[in-house]
Length: 88
Image (cartoon, rainbow, N blue to C red; front, side, top):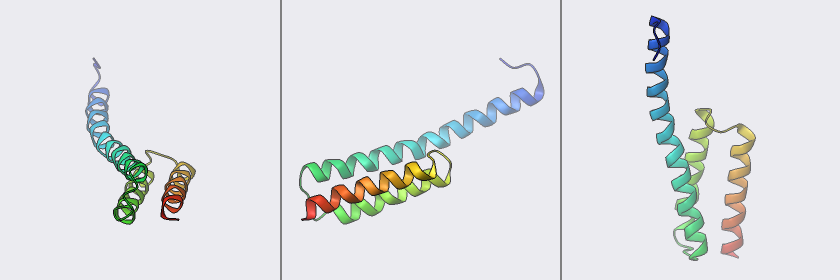
């Protein structure tokens, strides 16, 4: 437990930021799982909507510095490739 005033404040801030970051991190993983499950089940009608929601979650996580820019680009590329493979 921190004793100094600034360390106590920093601990409180870190707790709040961790909770906020976990919301966006969980949203990112759930959107990606939804998309991959839809691809496996061949739900072609749902794919465009799920792809846009996955893109939005990836972009938000990138903007909030939860994932790096190239990591976000790689994830988006792989999702698009998956969807394109199913729609053929």
